[in-house]
Amino acid sequence: MPNIDRQREHQANERTFLAWLRTSIALIGFGFAIARFGLFLRQLNLVITQQETSAHPFFNSENLGLALVMFGIVVIALAAWRYNQVYWQIERGDYQPNRFMVWIMTGVVMILGILSIPLLLWRNHVSPSRVPSQPQSRNLP
Picture (spheres, helix red, strand yellow):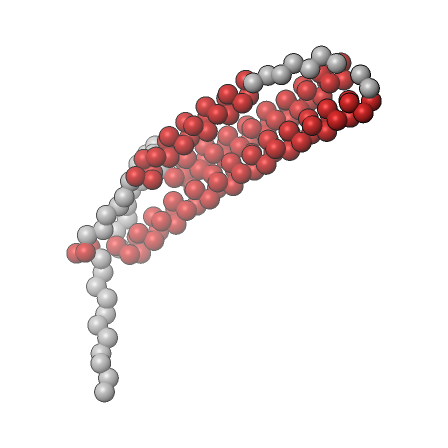
């Protein structure tokens, strides 16, 4: 294989690895934000209603966020493994495309997306009687 073609293939392999790296960073960032935002909403609800709400033991934002962070870590490990595998296939001249990781990523992201639907639909309705009364302001002349 000509040297310039081999160089282009290695650069394409590196760009692909960097795309997977960006994806894993996004998954970790989204997971962290979702987990912390759920905690913030529970604390805000406690301040507003003066009543603590209990989260579902499985379908809650902390678990979804943790799953996204763990999946992001797995994605970067798989990306590094795949980068190395493709590197050696380019060097040997026997590159074989593999769509398995793409299908796995698609499936896991779809599952995590489906699991987030109950969190989006769940509403903690606050009745007006539970909201603490606001102090009345006095009208000054």
